[in-house]
Image (tube, rainbow, N blue to C red; front, side, top):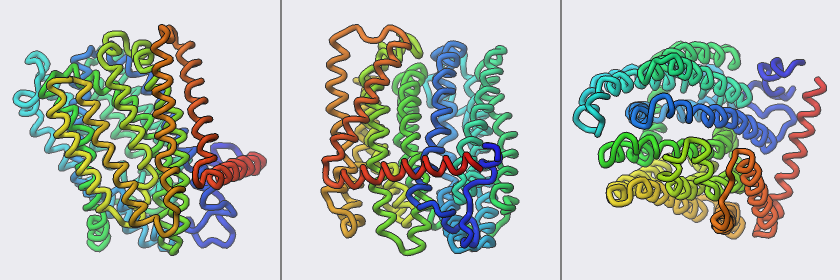
Length: 543
């Protein structure tokens, strides 16, 4: 069997299972989670490379000012996602639960109603952005008069780009519910690559900002049709023809309401910084800040994607009444995420100025290096909440996420309004990092009210925060050592020293973490999972 055939076939079913919602093959839940996490990381690793190499070209072709307008245009459409009312996560949850009960008819109803809702949201949101774009450009943001028409066009085209992505949420949710993370990540990575390459081709041919965004919007619309068809095929024929299902919509929107508040807080914490920079400083500063945020967000999304595979698993385990097993998996996953986060963020923080200088030039590195270092701290803290956040979703504790996100957003808005005028980009980074401290507070509250009955406190907190403390020490020591010499002067040297820093960080967290409370059990679990994955791959390769 070829690798392509294995991807389309998906995981093998247990001969005793009744359908795709049941446990798959002899494969354990933990082993399946690790395998799916690897697929998730692979997909985002591919996009990291593509974005990494494309950003310098985009900045050089557009210029700092137009690049800032592009970032602003993309961020304007983001609030339209609030109209989603959390439907995407609700669709994944109730699809997973229906499949866990072998209720394909119920799963089909949730999929059809989700598609109906997302199409409606996409149309309404796009219309709003098209209508208000002139007012935003001319009256709100500090955009040069000569760039007004281009900025209005870019905002309107970005709304179409967003609408296509919004509609793709339902087929993505279907693949997630079916646990097809292999196809989901390969397919979504290829799709995003094609969309970006179409934009780069338009930019290379002289299309300017509107040509760049317009080409991506057209490619995104076409990719949406392909994605829907592929999702229907891998789900065994679950229809994605939109349908108004009152009962399904009521249930998903009730669950999704709290996710909408969660999204509002996320938008406040992420996008408001761009808006405030555009109002308080200038559009060029938006571009500089976005370079740093794009880098740390990409690394954060690797951890987020690892945690995301827990959502359908936790929903299924909770549906079976196995709450303790779900809690243990989440705690171990949090520790693994902290290892990965340390290996990623410590080298970036140590070599921030060298990385930016080699990547996007000295002009940006001189201004934004300190900003990047501060944002690494905030993003690491956010990574620790990746797995627990999906546990809260899977156990219908959306109120927790909504409250946390709103607090995060409020802190970021207030802090950035106070700190950006005197400190510039560094003030924005401090506000960003300050908002993420709410994640640590919620992690503590989760143990006190949820995990305490199953997980000892010392084991829980060492898993949640041990990697962060060790990485902070290593990052500080590495930065002092870096300041003692000139630093890497080429990509080869940066790769060598950055790789060494990542390896040392991961080794220290793993080895020292072994002696922390609960560490030996976590180490044995990881080694067992790795051996299981290797044996599974060997069996599949022989088929």
